[in-house]
Image 1 (cartoon, rainbow, N blue to C red):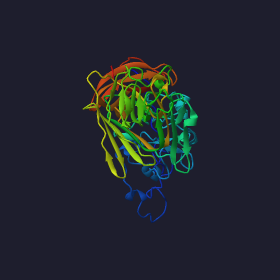
Image 2 (cartoon, rainbow, N blue to C red; image 1 turned 180 degrees about the horizontal axis):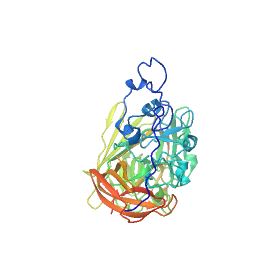
Image 3 (cartoon, one colour; image 1 turned 90 degrees about the vertical axis):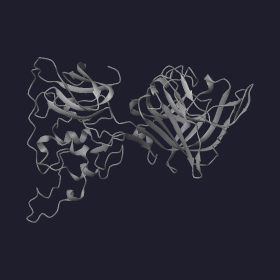
Length: 453
């Protein structure tokens, strides 16, 4: 393969951090005659952080205190200077475009907000060669990931809109309770399908281990509030495919709901022709074809004003969704949902507090009020880990078994990506290389992961 020679790395400045370019305050680089101990002697440097240091800077330059400790930064929020934030799904530090622009050059690390890459300029100011690995998956940053499971956590201590939460449907059903630092919710089945949702940044299926949960306080709930709809609809939250749920028509019923994993609680209601139905907890999953798997536990009444903690966890090995429902008084037993052999895959891409419309359920209705807090989603480890640039047009990475990986190339960002190589994942390092026998003025590469070849 013929390709343009990569840009030479600039000589690292020992007084500047090789990750962010800021002063590292290393005592070995100052001019004081008596230096004393350095701050880094009392700090532990994670392996994932050290792996991000360019080879040329591994010894000459120290990582700064800010990159080592993340001091002063919280998940999803800008720091005081607006220089960076911590991605809530990866736990990795991400630098903002304004800071990268002030730094004045491209570090060739594939930074998410790099203004130099957008302009097609490499570190030397010439055409960008194949040093950047632009990744499709938003939860992999700068070509390196810890390889561990991560979590999306929402305590509602500040405005959730600043962290990507959006209302789809009736905005009057959801409001941020600033005093209580929680989400006030109305579940009204006469209102349209409505979701207080946040994208996960990845898609989950039946081959993934995941969990979701929240704290729930119901202040009042009436099932069968609109006769002849005397049965009860549900108080619900969980994971769904937001793109599909927003399509019309979409009904919350077997065979008409798709790509859904949710916790449901039904207050007491009266089903026509059957009689009174006790309050019920019913976790449920719907696959992409509309097949449903659920389990009913009754009677389970959520007492108004009582704080309930809910956790639903899915085990892909046993294909089981288990629910833990607890209060300060102890655990409330809930039956597990075991997927039948006929249950297919499902595609979940958002967390949501859910209000279902009653139109698809002619016998049921609901009006309930309450509060949701401490929403969280546990995400599996990404299938793509520790991407390393090993040669022009070649990368090494660890790929998870059960996934298929592709190396794609483009002449510039924004151009069409072309698949040029692929490999099936195994739980060990893999290499993908550009097989083309050609010379390029400039070339961008990215690695993508999918379940199917």
